[in-house]
Length: 326
Image (tube, rainbow, N blue to C red; front, side, top):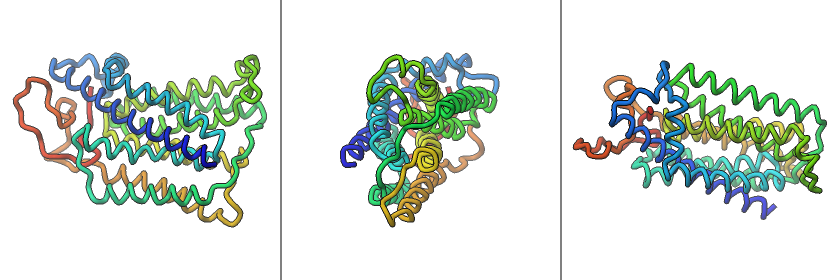
């Protein structure tokens, strides 16, 4: 249990740091395109094009963040096999706290009192979950369930990509939520994957859960990148928290046999609900207030001006900041 918790905390740290670095890279790419008055990176619906997302992905900040994501993925996969999913996924989702704190320094964002209070609620809920968690269930499931997991991953990522492109800049929170569902499917896939213990390459390659992991992981990362481009870093991360926590936690109990300590079921349920509610509260309180009307695609950038610009810095924003377009 202790090793699993430490692994999940380390994964959370990697994911949280990676999210902020990816946001820095995405915003740097957005400023460059804005400085050249480029419209090639925007779809007809106002969302980022594939080329725009690719440009954001080649900034050094984004690449370092991606490396941290891969390390976090490895640590998170190990945690998913050592802990009940309702605990491992929730602890990993606490990267929201790390994202918030690092955003103060790297993105120039000032947290409001409600945001700090919401973060404290999330931390308190994690303590409740760690106290109540019992042994994790087994990973032996019918092969039909593995095929359903692959089909669900394809539906979430494929359908999500299409919907996000149609909704454009209005889809930031939705993109974060769908990326979270993808990462949640990844966690479930890791738990049920055949051919790991004992290791068998042929069994591993024949398992649909392996391809569900690849689809959900790569697709989830893409949708998260889009969410960081067009919306607030913490709003997207908070929506991701809900997506990767709620569904895996419920399926872990109903499908995989995860359980709490005897007599602590109510504590586990309370901690789980409070953790999700705290994450939603961070997204709610982090929403920017209107400043003379809705922001347009041309002025919805991060607080840092483009290089060479002589404009003064705008006043500090809340954790959500302004939406970032590319």
